[in-house]
Image (cartoon, rainbow, N blue to C red; front, top):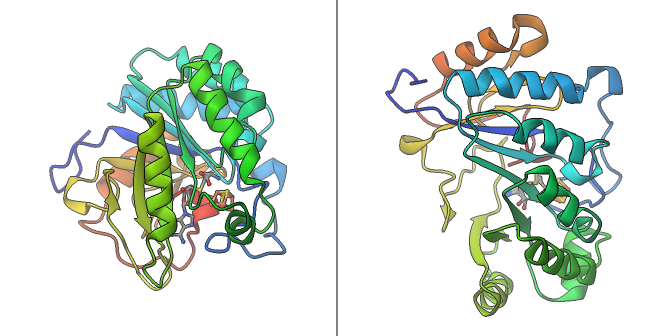
Amino acid sequence: MYDSFHRPINYLRVSVTDRCNLRCVYCMPEEGVPYIPHSRVLSLEEIAEAVRVAVDLGVHKVRLTGGEPLVRKGIVELVKMLSAIDGIKDLAMTTNGVLLTRYAEKLKRAGLDRVNISLDTMDPEEYRRITRRGDLNEVLEGIKAARRAGLFPIKLNAVIPPNGDRSQALQVAEFAKENGFQARFIQQMNLQAGEFSIVEGGEGGNCARCNRLRLSSEGVVYPCLFSDNGYSIRRFGPREAFLKAVKHKPAQGLISNNNTFYKLGG
Ligand code: SAM
Ligand code: SF4
């Protein structure tokens, strides 16, 4: 698939839930958010069918995200369904890592290739402050479990706070280097204010080379994180929804009044 700016579109990010076991200060309010009722959330079969259609249309890279993908019931089953689809060259997940000790091995066996783990600091107190409830040790154990399971390469995503202080992220990069992981830095963004950032060490944020579409847990295909135009796969059917999203992919991100990271997974 090519969009109207001749960019090849071959990467689909799938948010499998809007729920999360953490409450990161830059992502969710402390009290949480009103959850999308179960009836509106796509079933595992609907997600798999949508991905199948996307692959038929030329997608070959798929990333599961959230909310926190590992709190979605049946996530291992979903990975199994997706890894059975011919044509996916790269099946990855972005996770906060808290539940990886429980799931890494099962995910690998189900066919997941690799994980990106969000980690902003190596300091346990700072980690608890940022995530409002997380235990750094659980994440570090989760990272080890991912390595043992052979999920490779492991990338660590660190958000840089608005004051630009990189000291915490640099410690994450040091930890990554010592252990053979890759670290990527991302500036904290504000979608509503149209504050946009390039991912250092990654591909995100470079509009001219953007190759992605996003599927929300409610089944809406968004052409851009910074766009309120979405096309429901339940309303249009997956094929039409993907084609409409590709057709309306903007040249670059603008402002989104509705989208949030916990809905679209970053
Ligand atoms: N829960 C999983 C996790 O944290 O990895 C997946 C979903 S989370 C929304 C995906 C990524 O978005 C995380 O790496 C997180 O740090 C990032 N993120 C969330 N809010 C952000 C913001 N306001 N600016 C920049 N990145 C953000
Ligand atoms: Fe949850 Fe990820 Fe958002 Fe943190 S960034 S609150 S872990 S969805």
